[in-house]
Image 1: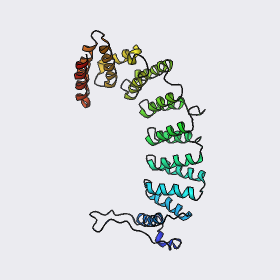
Image 2: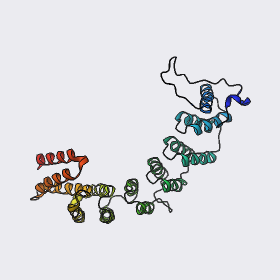
Image 3: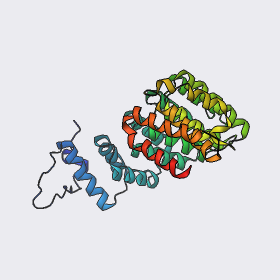
Image 4: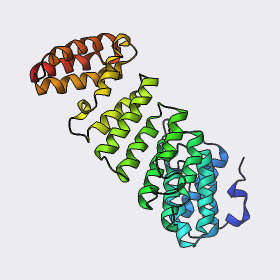
Length: 308
């Protein structure tokens, strides 16, 4: 339990401001005493716009009690700048807070702000990689990594700025949608979606779905890559071949068959004989085996009838 500010003589000159719940609160929150005490003093220094080392220390206590308190984080950044607080020390503080609050947006934004103030993001790849070892699908961590790579042009960093890092994560969990997304992001900002790159990436993704057929992330990745290729999904016969192999396992391989449906639809629009009928049959098969999206496959079939 945290020591109470009201018992600290160093804060005797401050009149705490209690939370105003109105005259007749219907259901007041039963705050812990140390939280209520710290927040009362925080409101006082915040209202007075106090800029002092003790106010900075107070923000640390308030944040320890509730790391999602965005007002405390904003005020802390203001104090760090005004007091010319050691930014390297603040960066370490942010790292410590993130290690205990992986999914808290405020702590990640604070680190970004401090890195921006320092003007050096060279430590961010290693830092985010360490966090992703613990939580490989942490949205805030991936968002921070993307920001740092783009802000400081870290795509060609020798350690883990390229695709090697993504490869390692996908070997650990081939269904890691965040890693697939990052792979796309890296290619987008480096070599680009040239015909050669797209062909290589399709082969890479196909190799994974051969091993794990019902991998929604990989099938979506294939669709995303093929969007940059003339002919789309039809430009790579291997995609259709692998998707067709899923027909006997329709109940388990709906994403593979969904991709096959896209191929049939494109062929039907191009006027390839029989493709429209195959597409409609596939819609029925998917509606029968994909309980969650029965209505969606019905809609796809109706839309197909209107177009073809």
